[in-house]
Length: 144
Image 1: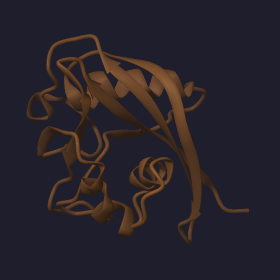
Image 2 (image 1 turned 30 degrees about the vertical axis):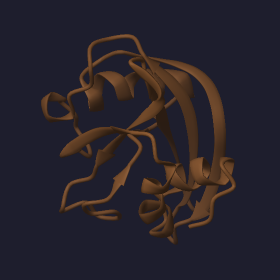
Image 3 (image 1 turned 90 degrees about the horizontal axis):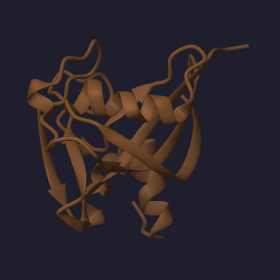
């Protein structure tokens, strides 16, 4: 039986414009999605609850504090040597504006960020296998 990796991504709403959400750009040397814009995410640790992992995204990936406020969806894919399950959680910003360039993380360090309102920006990532982007597009009945 192959291992299963569980991850959480956040759909973070801009408190200054609730029509906008935060996207982050993965680094050029990223193994799966180099230079692609998507949602911030982390792998769940041990017995960590998904909402705790979502809060950790705020601290480790965005250098701020966020509050999980809802479940958006979950997807599974076979990645060959492991099964991958990812959950999207809607979140609100409760700390200062995110600053990915100042975040201190042990894993993927994002190289840029922006608030956007156009869901279509997630189509590139979704078409390349990004489950978090696929969940959002599926929720809006948009293809990729």
